[in-house]
Image 1: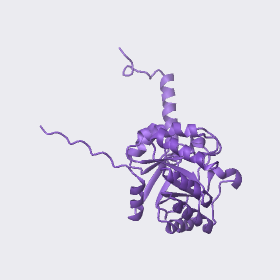
Image 2: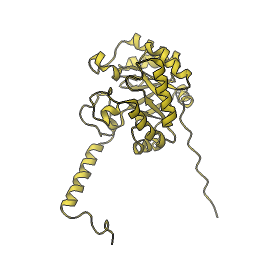
Image 3: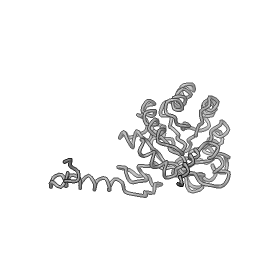
Image 4: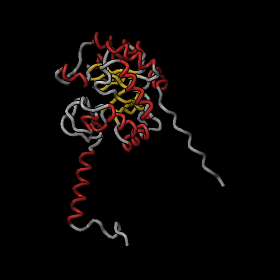
Length: 271
């Protein structure tokens, strides 16, 4: 009697495999995830990197900015995503002010991510001024994805979410992050030519969000991408489905079936 061969375990995406994708001229896919079922389906779809973003403050918690989310809350969500991901690398944002206060606080926060959530790396907003912080975190054995361009945690300094156009400064920020040991650089909300210039200036992968087509990879907030958001939708987002409409229609149909006595029927009732 023939027996089926056991499935070969999926190869985990790592800093090294991401670098190989970049060196081979490939593209990297990245999406946000904040819970087990979402992370599971994105992982099964072959997404390379899952980001437990501090965007959960806005997307999940309903805040106006990313600032209110705490480190404990990030760990709570990271644990769920970490349990679900079998192949994807999972990166966790260091929320405000874990990446702004003393450097050892950032190291301690990164240590919590690796020890408590089984995730694999942290993301840190900032440019050249974060070089020493990135270096110290990496030296402690914690992989760092740098984040340059628009910095949502800096919203009250910037005054608004706007396109970043200072190409020389942005290139310097990315180079400084690479030199400090960052394994990748996320580039947010810059013109396409700036995204291309940054990508050409560094040897590590770049992940764009509103940074044009020339970066090594792309990331979007999953809720924006699947149409499960409310309110403002950034111009750089492409929606691939309309989940909000689907859920609304399903909930309305459920309500109607209860009101008409159609649910539960014989099939859904125990005898």
